[in-house]
Image 1: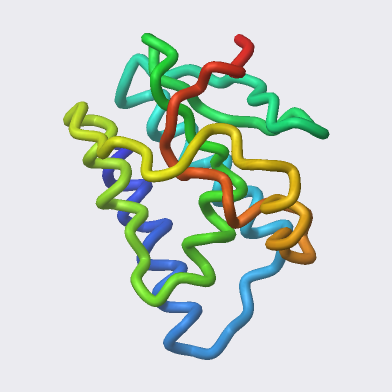
Image 2: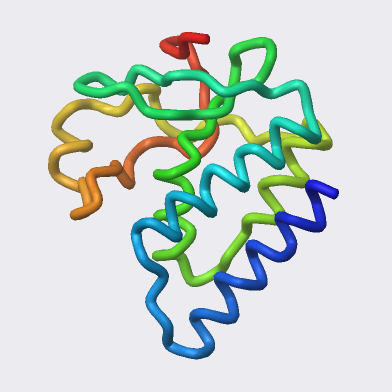
Length: 136
């Protein structure tokens, strides 16, 4: 059932793009939490607060603490991306096939401030990366 829901979330995002319909902030944040809930139901990942310096962000994290996804920041990044990969990331997490993070974690304060979009979520945060600062 979680994969079916994630598939529908991705179809909604792609459909909205095709129609030229903007997805509101409220819809984005609700869909992000729904996506995260699907991951947590399909895996042993759990909800956490992720310390990103000046704020705590809602995230889902792997049981071993090696990976975390700030679901709202990830979802905003997906909306800006050419390709929507919500199903791909979901399947990678479920299959335990996550890439090694390409950047340090957490990113420097200057990169967060420079690249922070208007909704307040950093584009520089790794989608998946070591969650050394995650707190259950």
